[in-house]
Length: 312
Image (cartoon, rainbow, N blue to C red):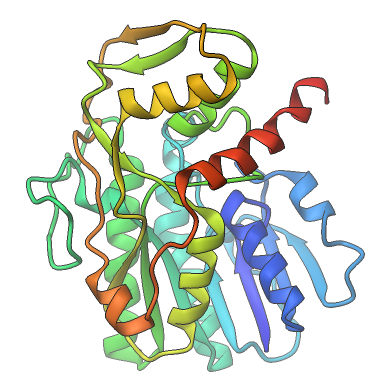
């Protein structure tokens, strides 16, 4: 196949590029490096099946190559520090960026995949969260630029499907971690690992009772590939239903790296979800998919990636 991936220099995007090139597909990556990393692009520049376009998809997709089989829209800042630093750009990439990617897929008769997020559920009143839950989102709070951008992106994707006949897929990604995350990502996995590697106390917000479900990136990529192989247009949760409190997770990371470190507590950020756990019934039944990587294995690989970064 010939594929185009927006956000190809990002954490998840770069793993998709790696998987598709390994399977023999040709691929065009697009990124503007607001949150992507140039070193992720450099991993693939020598590959004959890869071409890169530096562009802001919010302003258009300057692609003039051969026909496309898939457009996968993964461009967006995804961590609170990054999207709160770039709130307008985050809203733009969810709105205009998604429309430009949809238009490109429509022109080429290609299939389209949207990377949405568990954040469309907000601070949920339903637990675990099934795809049928409409969410509890603050539309003008500090996280709204990301949450509402993704909710709008889902809406316009479904509009193109219903009114233009575009063959679409929507994935709702739950907390995902692994190699190639940015060290300054600002989410809990990278925060804890880098604080521990630097010998600093681990910072927990609130009392640490809020929960997250952590999915290793290889499992997510497998779920994405499987969804591309079936015809299903409604959103699909892709996440790990193994749930941990943030305090439990801090203790796991501390004990793995340096058991002598302290854990310190800071006030809870506004609108930070108290619970996050996917209902993956649809993914299990439709895709015969569920996460295969246990937390210990995934954390070991992620720590190994970040250890050399201290001397880079």
